[in-house]
Image 1 (cartoon, helix red, strand yellow):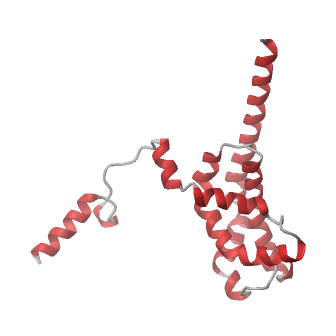
Image 2 (cartoon, rainbow, N blue to C red; image 1 turned 180 degrees about the vertical axis):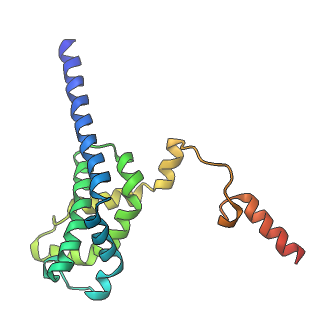
Image 3 (cartoon, rainbow, N blue to C red; image 1 turned 90 degrees about the horizontal axis):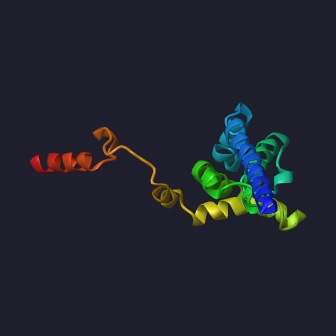
Length: 174
């Protein structure tokens, strides 16, 4: 019995440590100025400056490559945590699902070109993360979490039934 409790306690401690690492990555790294610049460059400038296809990550100019590697290694690290079951997938999906899919959409041709040169495993954990995010939509997870939300929002946002009803009434009157 003592051995069983010791093993459970060891696993619990390992999970707690891994969760702390994940939280550190999710908060500190993602909010750094360097990460924000890298993400902005990849999402808004990369394809315009260096249009695919056929350009591998390593063939990009130094500055572009720096931003691409910074962003892709971040998501690759999170994907590794998923692959090795070091963190609860719900923690990652709630924070990086949308952003990782956006980054993958832009970076995929560059990554595939790099894989053609290096081998198929280049940034495979990043792809794993995005695959999980794509097949486990955050909207579905939110319902499972039973997250609380307000029943109404300002009408000008158009996010509640009363706003839709008010607009409908305006059109009926006009």
